[in-house]
Image (cartoon, one colour):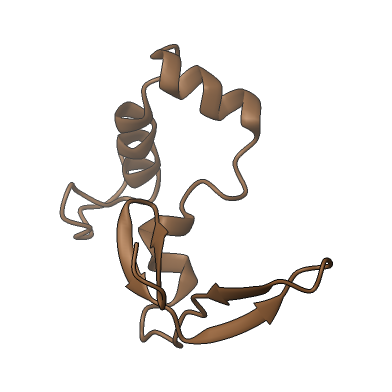
Length: 89
């Protein structure tokens, strides 16, 4: 890979910073720019506070993330587009 670029989650990103390791070796790093997207709606952060045990069960198919999301929308009185439809009676 070219100097000045790093691979992050299989995306090649131009580095915009430099730091040094404990052994003194120079290391190029990518420092994200402030984005307009709030962390609360950024899908990259959706599972950061989720317990590892639940993530493992989701990956194994032991729990249905899609169904849980549906249940949460219904409990908020929302349809699949996030539109208010009221609560189930």
